Length: 279
Ligand SMILES: NC(=O)c1ccc[n+]([C@@H]2O[C@H](COP(=O)([O-])OP(=O)(O)OC[C@H]3O[C@@H](n4cnc5c(N)ncnc54)[C@H](OP(=O)(O)O)[C@@H]3O)[C@@H](O)[C@H]2O)c1
Image (cartoon, rainbow, N blue to C red; front, side, top):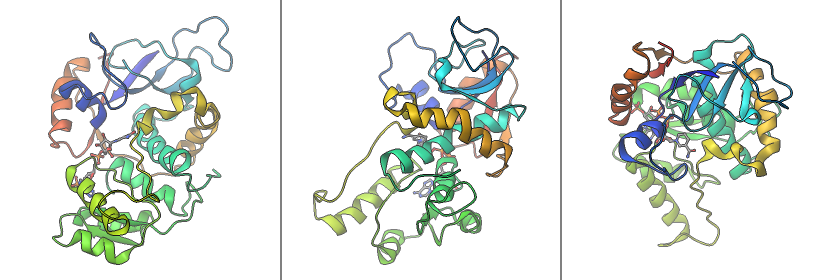
């Protein structure tokens, strides 16, 4: 398969700091955890796919010009944009997996941050889902109105000095979810949980720290994987059920990955970066 790649925070962490949270790294390693492209060749016995089909694919080692994929985890995208498909697939899948498989908040029938924004939409009753929770979100002050538009009932500026007290006053909460990966939000969660459960996590608090983005690659979730790959992603993309994502494409093929990863790692890039390894 010939891929287009997105540089996610996970990729930058793995590449630049050896982060192994999504699975242990065994060097030498080809980095890159998600891509999109066209099927060039199929192994014998693969059914339901054809050469020329366009699909997203989630596996490690996507930062190379040609990628060998597991046919089971290819999600077809029809004639839709490569860039939008790769930018939406990963964070939307992460948010849906968190709520649907791990928190079991409800079954789907159909923050400014990529994962956080989809989490708000998914947890709320919007056009991508019908889970139907009340959502309290934290976000940058400039993103407050957008988050409300996505479905959050209250949006608190995460840089405000009293953010934890404000969150506590709006509780109690059934689910707490950080989608920013920073220590501030983790400390805020700890503080909120301690208020409810004592110095240690109480017996009624479950801590869930998982590589949600890789979960459906496991056979135990094959039903969810089939739903995502054969039905849900294409439905979301075709129906324009999430807003298009702004992105940059630096050119320079694979040679752009080091600088792009560094900028993502250091939080310098606000837009999304897509790299075409064929350039
Ligand atoms: N466990 C998994 O399977 C999984 C899967 C995907 C991603 N992740 C992790 O999730 C994190 C986010 O990924 P992403 O792709 O969504 O990155 P992203 O698009 O860069 O989003 C991060 C957002 O978080 C906001 N933010 C920073 N601190 C915050 C806080 N204390 N409270 C609320 N919002 C805050 C930032 O807002 P401003 O820029 O406006 O300040 C930024 O928009 C990363 O650490 C990534 O590694 C984990």
